[in-house]
View (cartoon, each protein chain N blue to C red):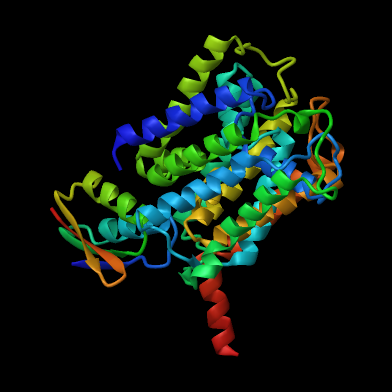
Length: 71
Length: 358
């Protein structure tokens, strides 16, 4: 499973990092992305859904948000 | 965010832009972040172009509206420290490019919606500039991460904006207000301020960004932001038709010139710089309202860029482009190219290796 820490990054980097991780590992069916702002949360969620991840949910993780997605 | 919200946000901004012109703003300049920061710089005496000096309440409203909205929705977060000086320099370039074209990307959309075909060439330049930026994004361009800051750091730009509002209301003798030209044309203060606040809230909620619209469409085939930009174009077009301010053509367009090459290159520079900054001038105002002090530094870069533009004779006018403006655009394209390359991982990591080897 790919785990991506995008904290501190401004858009579009969180999405680019997610895209790279998802594409790079070929058959990734599970991914976790740590985001620290609402814009990144929206963008990464939208990207994961369009990349074929069916279950995408977000939960608070301290001051940040952890997005868990699986196909 | 839902698609319907960004379409509503874009439609609101498009309609308000047409309405602000009816209420007294210069033609096709209901909302223009570059022009309005330039006018504000002039009012403070940072440049002495007498026809473009006025503290624009729209800009103040946008920042305050974005801050209020971010606080209400618990999204206000003081952050900064991601290559602030690089951002400052990029912002100077973005502003100089915009003033060679005569408008920020938002005004480019508004000019297009009023039939100004020079803006179509500007749009082509803007899109190509964004494409250039994307090449570097795909190679890993990064201005590095930001860090949590204390609340005051994240609130200072909104505080400065409140100070500007104070100067506008009190109008002390040291503040300059144009007696003629675009700077003298403005809607009543409360209408401008109110429209700014509404635009600030709408853009904060939806993350509306003129550069982001084209960037995300190319980079991710994600058309969410582009729908907002499209909504601005369509509603402003309808508004212009309804109010009789639509005139199709290249010649005699308000506050515009017909030099295609420099319309293209001006916004090419603005588009490229905006990609590296992560947002167009409007988006920078919104982010600075959300507590992002890197964006606040960017806004100050835009203001200084405007001052340089007019002090050094770089800004175009309806008469055309200046020789100094052309040289500045070429020089700044080189500067932006150097910044693009120097922040690629292959360069930054190589530099680290060399340092460790020594």
